[in-house]
Every structure is written in C-alpha cells, then in structure tokens.
Length: 334
Image 1 (spheres, rainbow, N blue to C red):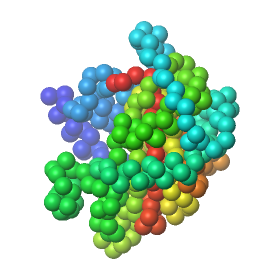
Image 2 (cartoon, rainbow, N blue to C red):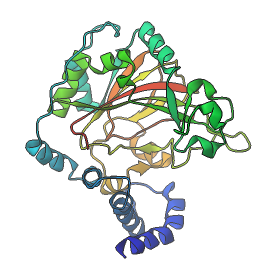
Image 3 (cartoon, rainbow, N blue to C red):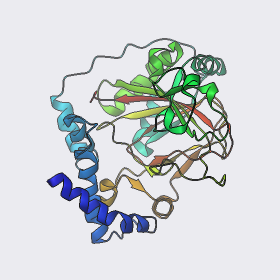
C-alpha cells in the first residue's frame, strides 16, 4: 500500500514540477519541489526491483549529506580489500605522478594530463571490433535492428553494425578488461593505483570497466535532442559510497564530438542537490559557471575524477561521435 501511495503522489506531482525544474535555482527550491525530491529519492531507490537491499542502502546513503560519515563507518567495519597486483606496461606517454593526481583530486575533484600511446589505443580499437556492444538502454529488437545480423538474442551488436540514423546513440561494452589484455594492464598501472588508494584511503577494487561509443541523438526532423532519461544532462553518480572513474579518449574529441563536461569544486552540495542528483543546464551555469570544464582532447588523452561531482556527456554533432574507455575504482562490490 505504501508503494501505491507513493507512486500516486509522484505521478500527480511529476508533470508540473518537472516542467518547472529547468527554471529552478538551487538556492530557491519551493516546498512542493523539495517534497517531491524527497519522495522521489526514496521511491526511485527503495522500490527499484533491480537493486539488492545493500545496493539500495548504498545509493540512498550516497544521496544524503551523511554520505562521508556513513562511508567512514562502513569502511571501518568492512573486510579489507585484497591488494591489486600492478602490471608493468609501456602503454603511457611520460611518467605518471601519483602525488600530483592525489593533490588534484583532493583540491578540485579531477586530474588531467594522462596520455596513452597511440599504439595501445589502436590495439584496443582493433580488439573491440570482435566484441558485441549493448545498445542504448534498450534491447536491439526494440530498435528494429535485424536480429539475424546481430547474431543472437542477447540485445547486443557489433560496432560495425552501427549505421547513420539507425536510432542508436550509445553503444556500451561491459568489462573489456576481462577480454582485452591492454585494458587490464592500463587498469593495473601501479602509479594510478597508488593515487587512487591514497584518495580512497583504502585498497581499491576495479569495480568495472566499460567502453562507450556515443553518436548523435536526433528527432524525426533530424534535430539534435537530449537522450531518454536526460541522457546528456548534468548528474552525479551513486554506484558506490566513494569511487573514482578513469577515462581515456579513443578518438579525437572536439566540441562537436560529444566531449565530457565536468564541474570542479562542487563537493559541498546543497540539501536539494543531494535529494535530486540531476541539475539543469541553467542551474549549472548560474551556480557553477566558473567551474565548468569541457574536456576536449586527442586520441589517448586521459583524466581521472571523483564522479560524486557533477558531470555529463554531451550529444555529438559529428556522426563519428566519441569513443571512451572508462575504468572504475571503488571500495566495495555491492
């Protein structure tokens, strides 16, 4: 009964409140909107049937001002993680400064100037040609893609099957470090692990790795539009109580390629921002305009960041889009 009542409240208030959300400022949240956000937080997390109880606890905790306190208590009692064994490789250009990475993360939430050799990027791109990717947030057959061409009923297709204007705007390869040796070696770089360990204050885990390929998302009139679920909007992540994401561009990324965007120095969020982990473009520009950083780069450029800070992907203009390697370091497998 509680589930039904909450769902009714959400449905009744959703239309008017969400229509006004883009004009809302963080410092001027109406009582009605605050109530909606509070209910939506628990409705969306607590009644999500795809999450275990532990995951629900973690995600709700990560969306409150008590996040750091709960994290410290959890880490005090949890079993120690096994030490990641470093793997030597020559995949990086230049020496990686662990201390600088840590200081950058501590001061602004992000560290840049990491660089992969083009040769290792080429190897990764070659290997993913033989891997099947998940498509958008939906099954392949929903998009009317030929299942015979896809090869099976898994809801995955090869990257080469992507064609222009086929409704595919995101392709995702899950955990390539398990099948692609070079990705695993990058994830186990000693200097990066040392920086991550110091920031997380414990031995890190490799929670997951992914390769994302992002393409233009358009309406029936060929105009660029945001993806379903505000795909390209500002948000912060709640996949762990504390974790970092390491990114590397696998192609050249300019302002028309769908670059990553990061807001530095937004560790101290308002109560409203904790309740609703997404903010509008207008709110981001008004509150954080001097801290917004658009991550342009060439093939192999990398950066590591605390994704409890606001960030977003952007909708590419170019059909070639953006290819991105993502490595996630966390504190616990939830």
